[in-house]
Image (cartoon, rainbow, N blue to C red; front, side, top):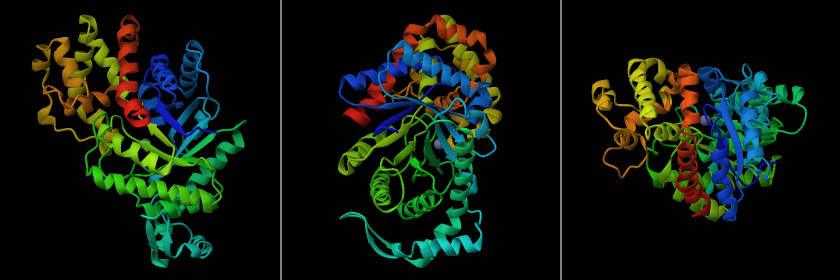
Length: 411
Ligand SMILES: [Zn+2]
């Protein structure tokens, strides 16, 4: 069973598990238990050419090396019925991604049955003192039209795993990779459908309002996010009390890394509702590798080579992430300019320090999605990581603990 707080870590090349665990051990020393979950999606594995078994080996090795004393998981992140089978042996956490099935119609009879079964939700539903929903039959039916088929698809993936997997596993249902956010009322209806489908979801990842671009801060109205997030927490609490769902069900925020401006409001809301959280922020670690490499001449040469190749292959690299990046190409320094930069300049452009005048969010987003180039460099890249292991380890640990774990879970 997944603990109250958990964090989706993991890294592109399976080298930073120990550094990430070092950050979680620091949290443990500060009295906060956070369960590590090494997450890696089919998309990421196919871009890199890695396998779920490699992620499992890296996680197990890190746990042994640091004597990590608590549970940990390996997450088949964003899997579908087509991709899940390759993850079943190595993983014990499955993120069932059914965003592509939103808006597909379930059978009319199934929708009618769903509306009948949940007629008791219709009316004025008081979730907390602040959160009162007015659910009408039209809203119930509209949400079923929009989401019931997607939840049924999650059921198909879940049963596929159940039929093949020996031993317990954690299930997450995710609908975050879509353009339209789910309202808290819709989330309530989705959770009712998840319970009906018999999926023992321990985490659920809705699409929240605003932009969750890769590697950079939240773009949107933080106050609107805060009230939506709190209403979602109230929904989860209500759903756990009223539907057949695991008692530890919690929200999962697929942050796309580094949503620093949201951490204080998320922390406030978690305290107010005494709620747990799963935060996925794995991608930030790959950029810390690059920042660490900038400190040495040979490492800087590799970072520049990756960036220059990324400029030339922009469309190819950006395309799989089109919905989660906003890069203004006119703000990307060209190869000639980069060639004049020293390591400190490169690191400042890349490091996510919004107070630094040299920070460039366009360059950061581009490098965030350019790990394919590092993968193509193969041993040259991995060798550089090994050579500069210490500084990278320190960057990864410091970034994860000071900039993510402390503001969100410790305060
Ligand atoms: Zn996601």
